[in-house]
Length: 155
Image (cartoon, rainbow, N blue to C red; front, side):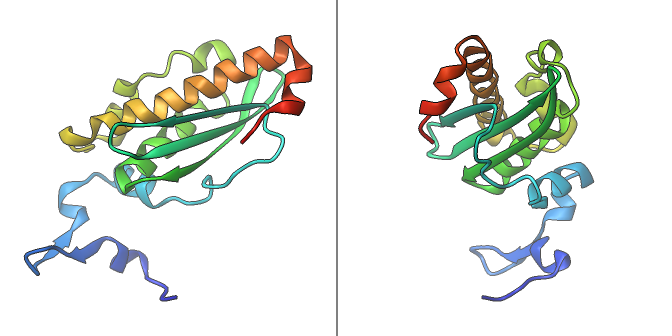
């Protein structure tokens, strides 16, 4: 498998055989969130789990580790495009360190604002990421009330 440098990842050959440079169309924040991979992993025994599939076919699974009512670690697994990865990373970036009540306030508009250059035809990716995150928060709340359910979660 070939390894690509960051510079090579930022450009590719389009269908019309011209080179497309992502730096011309996207903010540094968008590029960082689209290419960041350290949060992209499945967590065994997560405190909260949420999964959502969009109409586009992209799927996001969110995993939460919560300590003292604070979101300590968030990871995700996706089957989707770079826009979806950018949005999932942004949700994690905005939520880590927050208490539960503040985490529920994160919206797709917050994701869009943070990324600065999310394409208009991919705003659904922000909705998808926030939706999976909300499901993970709801799952955590349910498990907190009924701790035995954590033993039976299917992922």
